[in-house]
Image (tube, rainbow, N blue to C red; front, side):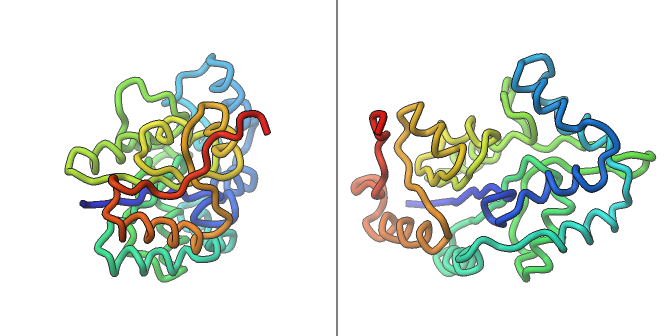
Length: 231
């Protein structure tokens, strides 16, 4: 049995929401209006990130430096990366932000070899032009399509675990074989009746994943929390 782990970046692999911090620091205009419009259905999902980052007035180097200053790994993430490397498990960062500053933050943490899937950026203009990353047709996510990365691994015979925390993880959470959820994603899993494991750090994720792998997966389910039935 082959397993792959997809992990959200903002608020998951790192404690901070680095993308929000960048928009708050460098965007000139109401970037949050596009999140509201997406939630209300008045802007197409694929328009949200390009419109938000078009408001950012800063160089690539400035944004990378700021990302490095803001990002702090969630406890256990470094150990999780080492665990996945030992077990030959692909660990992929999937982000609704832009890959260039995610990579800068990971490189500073000594994890620059981790693959990052998301939207790219072109600085040829006076503002950032978002270069679309992988996307499945009809994806409702307001950023890069995390489902496309999940499908890439599933098509190659992998069982896929997903670790996330926010509203832009809702779509992919319904497709993951194993779900680790906290914050808004945990509330969503409860409301949708999805099985999940909660976590505060990656030591918990690693222990539960290891238990599941050591029992060869599908025949012995990973310990999960069932929806609380309103409790």
